[in-house]
Length: 319
Ligand code: ACO
Picture 1 (cartoon, rainbow, N blue to C red):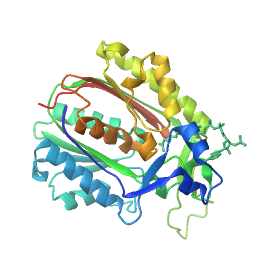
Picture 2 (picture 1 turned 60 degrees about the vertical axis):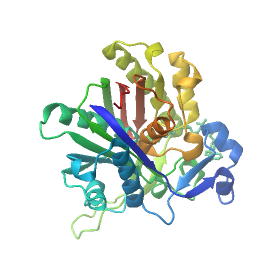
Picture 3 (picture 1 turned 90 degrees about the horizontal axis):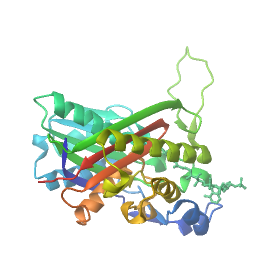
Picture 4 (picture 1 turned 135 degrees about the horizontal axis):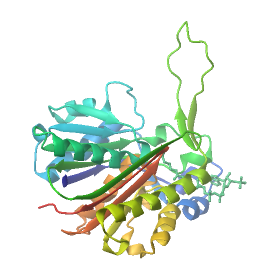
């Protein structure tokens, strides 16, 4: 595979930590020092379909192709208004694409899982040349806004990439462990006359310290495994694009890898944790600002509910 275009879309509404402190028992100081977040963007008038469409169209324009050139579309999403049809099917109509569409839910690791699926398709299917991945998330709709624990951590957003056949992928590493308790969101299904079992309905539940420890240890493991399979060292990597969950998690991983801060770009201060959209949004910003150069080695690493993790290394070559 090879990435030939990127895009992103964020809601217009900026919500600062101080704005949250108006109705939650929290403070700018607590949020900034514990997470690195200064503000986040939250959906208000727009919806997730708008964000998905804008991010997708930006990526298509950047790639220099039109929606009709897309042979397969993958959306990564944890939850949106529709359980069915999939977000990708809805988006297909909005951008006027004609191709098979599928959604995946790998929580915050979804982008890496989507890249892995795309790589397999591009490698094995002659009729698939261009794949559009859109990671679109609205975690603000599944956190509990009466509690300070999770609502302050997340933001909404969408990131997209267009991929074509190429040799830019150096290594891929995925893992999943069935660990529900540290992080879950549970919703009620419709009632039936036959199913009398008691059922739960919980906005996002997170055991922050457990997630923190799992995130740091699994990300370091994945990254070291990537070094081995790609036959590279940390020094060969130009930028580490880590899932933007918490600046302290990013820094703990950086310290274990003994690498300078400049190699760990971040935007969590502006957007909070946008789940699977966080890495493609960051990638788009680095690419469009000219920070990533031809030939740069990028190492992407994410972790999320499941517990899922994924990392990959790629050599950046747009031409
Ligand atoms: N404002 C003020 N106080 C708060 C807030 C808040 N917003 N939230 C929690 N607290 C309080 C708690 O009640 C607790 O109080 P207590 O000590 O009196 O019981 C205290 O702060 C906890 O503080 P710390 O122990 O210092 O918190 P910690 O350093 O663990 O940081 C955090 C908490 C930020 C949640 C951290 O554990 C973390 O980032 N974890 C990982 C989160 C994450 O990455 N999630 C990924 C989601 S992935 C997905 O797929 C959705």
